Image 1: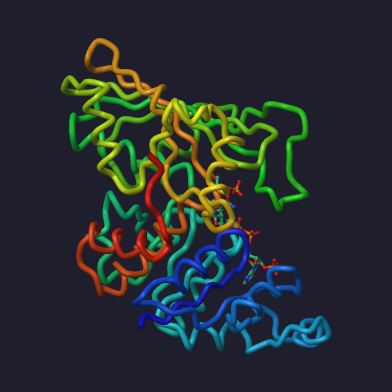
Image 2: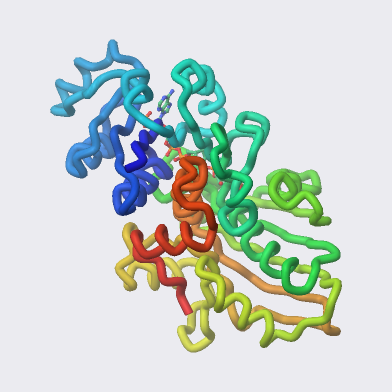
Length: 341
Ligand SMILES: NC(=O)C1=CN([C@@H]2O[C@H](COP(=O)(O)OP(=O)(O)OC[C@H]3O[C@@H](n4cnc5c(N)ncnc54)[C@H](OP(=O)(O)O)[C@@H]3O)[C@@H](O)[C@H]2O)C=CC1
Ligand SMILES: O=C(OP(=O)(O)O)[C@H](O)COP(=O)(O)O
């Protein structure tokens, strides 16, 4: 069994812990937080040993009824690999600790590519991750872009991509974020960081992205245009999407035309926390104009899509499973992911 520690048991960390715990070849040896809170009680209920960043705060946790297993250093020494899910920009500061103990580590998209020197997406570069010591799972938006762009590029060749991300302002549990009533150009400048982030995995893709933030928490929405090198039909694109286990297809017959309805659908499907691990591509939006001009809308559940990618990254770095298709199948089966159709 691969012994996994989650350093940062928050929005992403708690989901990664549950996804790892569900795998037949992995186990959670510990999770960490900096202060007592609801998620500490969830970790206790799940049986995940809780470690803390500052061991001098042990008394505050124990006063709250939370048993502390030790310090983050203690946790790291017990693990084979650490998933760093601390807030964006915090994870970089933990690298020295991982190096000190000679441990493998995976960061999330809030860290720069340079922190790990390798950015990961299971359907794009799984083989390159095999045996690596460090990796970064790219952010939710970049994960969603890489999945579909790589699929279309492999089938038809992509001359250029133009994409706009309409991003959620914060997660449902983020009571300190916004905006409340504005459309915020973020960034105002074009291109946004998403294009170069995609190129950290798909370096040959000509891509320009733009992004904004709006008052919603449920999901991001992408407008995607790809100019193809070779002609395609809408039907061919749909068949390719259907054959990809992390690309969901939202049928017109569901009546779903919004992130709220899609989230409700995921909840009704009894997904854990209503999580949509796959891209939510709106089938009716798929258009191929003049044979080579592809358009589509896709919803991205920011809290979820990186979670299954992180599990595959663990497996690749451990070297236990050599192919993406085999790992993805194990991961998807263990968490209960059958992409929506
Ligand atoms: N939220 C999202 O939609 C997405 C986030 N990401 C990326 O995932 C990463 C994590 O983000 P997210 O889960 O949202 O963050 P959260 O703020 O939800 O969780 C961060 C966790 O890290 C803990 N923490 C904070 N500082 C430290 C520290 N010094 N040592 C150990 N643990 C610490 C926090 O503990 P405590 O609460 O006790 O302080 C909390 O449990 C970021 O890189 C982010 O960019 C990627 C895709 C989507
Ligand atoms: O990290 C993320 O959310 P957050 O930093 O806004 O909490 C998401 O991955 C969105 O980030 P991105 O827009 O850089 O992909």
